[in-house]
Image (tube, rainbow, N blue to C red; front, side, top):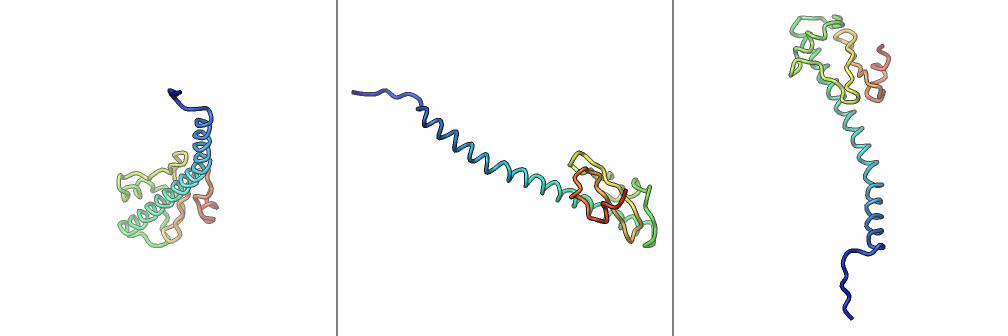
Length: 124
């Protein structure tokens, strides 16, 4: 007797679905964690870029260590490639610049508070 088997049995399909579900349960939390870490790293790199622009602005304008740069965002942005202050990709948030050259603070205005240090969180 010859059987002409076409397709898959229900048990075979259930095993494949179970394996896919198991892989999804393992992979999804890792992907979420990696995405969060990448966003935080990007935000910190943006802040580092802004700090460098503040230093360049201070050198170019002969500003001393106590010079304040509040309200001079456009001048500082000129020292960043693209001539614009970057935005944090978490909610397209902006950065608040405060302080003087010697104690510059760049705060991410994102709702994710883990982007900022304790000193930056104190800035309104």
